[in-house]
Amino acid sequence: MILLDGAKVAHERNLMLKEMIEKDILKYKRAPSLSIILVGDNPASQSYVKGKGKACDLVGITHKLYNLKEDIKESELSTLIEELNHDDNVDGILLQLPISKHLNESKLIDLISKDKDADGFHVVNQGYLYQKKPTICPATPKGIMTLLKSYDINVSGMDAVVIGRSNIVGFPIARLLMDAGATITVCHRQTKDLAFHTRTADLLIVSAGRAELVTQDMVKPGAIVVDVGVNRVDGKLVGDVFFQGVSQVASYLSPVPKGVGPMTINALMENTYELYLKHVQN
Ligand SMILES: NC(=O)c1ccc[n+]([C@@H]2O[C@H](COP(=O)([O-])OP(=O)(O)OC[C@H]3O[C@@H](n4cnc5c(N)ncnc54)[C@H](OP(=O)(O)O)[C@@H]3O)[C@@H](O)[C@H]2O)c1
Image (cartoon, rainbow, N blue to C red):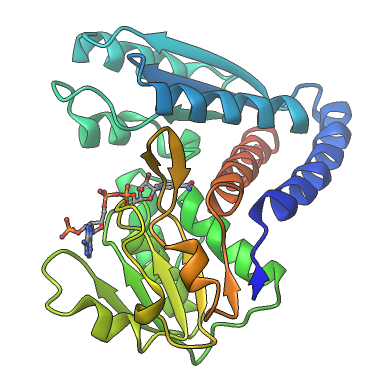
């Protein structure tokens, strides 16, 4: 089994990005910048935000964290987003999810300017994605596609099964894989027989958020398995795939942590850089 080493690939890509940004700072007289909005003090979100800040520091993206209180009014958050939308020195804005239940997540995401949508979640950018037009791609699906390409995995003609149909992972990765020539099955909680589908997969993408949902008997020998899930069990991070078992049958497998997570952050850095270039070149 070959490990899909997201940490290594992401680090290499971040170093290349750092070089490009260094040159562009000389040319355009300013660094790219990312504003990160964190609502509340969820430890997992704090740790993700910290990781994103560290990656910004590495590649040379300036970043500012707005850590807002859990019970912030929606109108206050909207005002902040509008201010950042109008700030010419801000290239990317990221609203760390999940946010408090009293806030309208989808409305706030769409309030972020589509031209500063570093996560690629804005309804217009997602619309472009589904119409195969150039756009800012959601970070996790983009990171997964980059990871597969880095291992010279060509998905064209493969039977790909995706577990999960969320707007941020399952649905867009299904679309990207389909565009890359794979034949797609998308499974979710109403799927009658999950294992029946997963056993057909040449490529299996697991993004359910259920610790060790996929076991060895559910995977076709030689399949490529990408584990997106991040679950905290007894203080330890585990994926949606039972690693020890599935590593016995898969040809490639991404670990948790150090698989899709760093690739997502790298994609976020690349998205922010892309937005920056559009801003400074206009
Ligand atoms: N590594 C990273 O960078 C990264 C980035 C984003 C997310 N994640 C992780 O990826 C996981 C998924 O995230 P998400 O935001 O997509 O979660 P989500 O919005 O909760 O979606 C989960 C999806 O999985 C499906 N599902 C849940 N349990 C299932 C089961 N037993 N069998 C079949 N399908 C099942 C759900 O089906 P229904 O639609 O029927 O409810 C839903 O479509 C989470 O663990 C999250 O932490 C990791």
